[in-house]
Length: 101
Image (cartoon, rainbow, N blue to C red; front, side, top):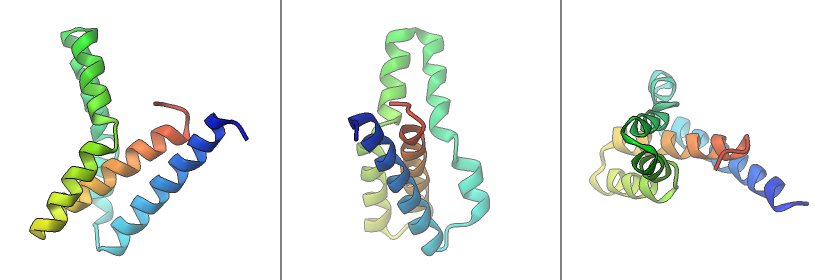
């Protein structure tokens, strides 16, 4: 199996796990739908130039940022922050499952 195929399966697994945890913790479906494409708003950074755009896009499409946000949400007990982080992780996983990143 090629590394690309492995990474796509990993993306599917991560996305499915994040959505499962999101729903299991009582995350509302409407919020999942609203936030599903929110990380792609970072593409607007390209309007300020390709250097800034690529940095902003990459920052918003790495797992470290939503994992840190999720840890803050769990630590403070603020469910909506945790849910946002889970949707963000699901988005990144879905992107990688279809071959982005």
